[in-house]
Image (cartoon, rainbow, N blue to C red; front, side, top):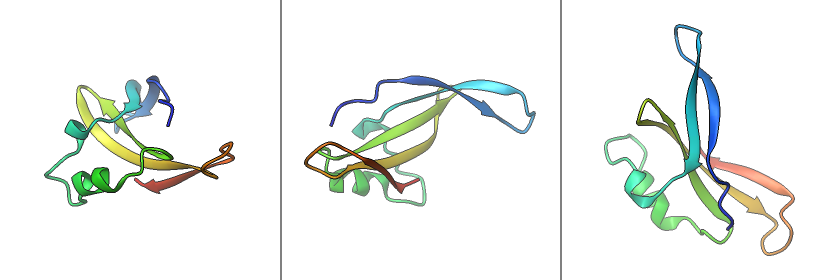
Length: 85
C-alpha cells in the first residue's frame, strides 16, 4: 500500500482553542501495550497490501490509532473502510 504521508490537522481540546496535531503512518513500535485494545496483535494481523494503520500525535504523544483498508483489492481502490478506531 502506498503511504499517505504526514499531515498537520487541527484538533480542539477542552479549551476549545484549535491546536495542531499530526496524522502519519504508524510503525510497529507505536503500538501501545497499555491500552484496553490489543493493537500489537492487530498490527500482526494487518494485511499491509490493502490495509494500513495511522496515528494521531498531539504534544508528542499518540492520542489515537486508526486501521483502514482500501477496496476493492486488487484493483483501483474505490472505498476506504475504517476498520478499527
